Length: 454
Image 1 (tube, rainbow, N blue to C red):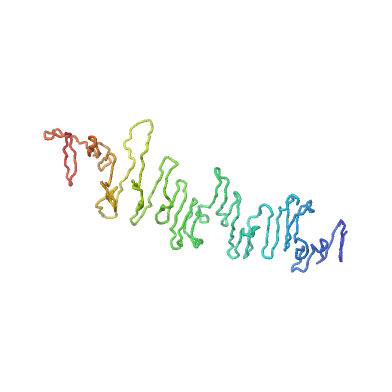
Image 2 (cartoon, helix red, strand yellow):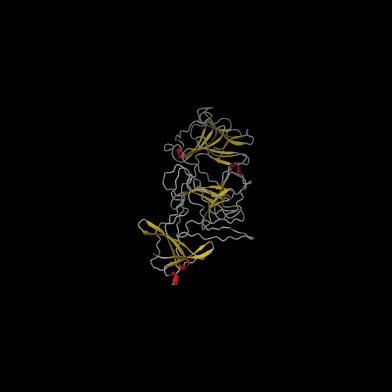
């Protein structure tokens, strides 16, 4: 049948139409025993359009729904709920008798546009999702809570609670994908959160800056880094002070922790012990003081805690435990000098004539002082468990250049000071009664102490 149909046309029996079935303007194809659904070219619109009308519960017994299904499943019952507003369902090819939740639906509920997935996730294959200029966008879950919203004025997208990014699915930040964050499963040992950041240029400076919210858009004045660097700033406005930060990075040869200004403090209560260890056989910990051109810098300051309520027992402030066995190769040989702890003397210089009255390489200000309710039987500024050897001002290991002070046990309970100095006694007539003599300096003059073994 072909041609135009005027007036009403009702067909209850199957009819095959070959050719063109034409409906004029504002003429509709009606579906259902009433006017459950109509389809026609509608000229009442500002711009003429094809309009599909579907009865909603307010109009009749219809669900207000348009279902798009596989041809083989047309007769199946998908059990869609009645909707107060027209809604479109697109079902998978699965038969209704097997599953009725494999759908994507679209509707407007008189307040918001709603896109719903019955089962599974929503996969969007697009380079980006963005609202029109000046418009806002919101994506919501079925429970109505926000998944992501975009501000009309700032174009800022807010991601809601419960948002999930699957393995190796990343978030890009920056117009050039300057930062990428993902849960990475490419790690050989264990999956990890991975943040990739561009380095080496002003456009990709390599820095991750943790700062106060109010300083978010301020310039923190960090130079471009060749390696990723974490900066943690104080709450001070960087326009006032941009050097109040702690930094962490690894520069290929070494890991570094630095501060822009001030000391690096290990806070009591937060860090109860600090362990430094090395995976190589070279230097375990190395500290290099920054050069200062003014002031009175201290290279290392240890401030002991003013403890209270301690157990009545020895309390050691600093313990250098070198009490281990050091084994050398089995090839044998001679080691000219072996030292466990070494203090190298500084050289002091000045731009003009300057006098230092007393200079020490190491200094102990006094012996321990007894406080309230304490009696100290013997107070010592320095205690040595072995021999003390005094070399000459030149670093000589020759026996003739040294004097040794040590303790010597003459008998049970009888320990004396032992002094050793290798200066032979001349066989002079006046000295035959002495077996040893030792040079000493008293008030700027040199004397011999004459000694005998009896």
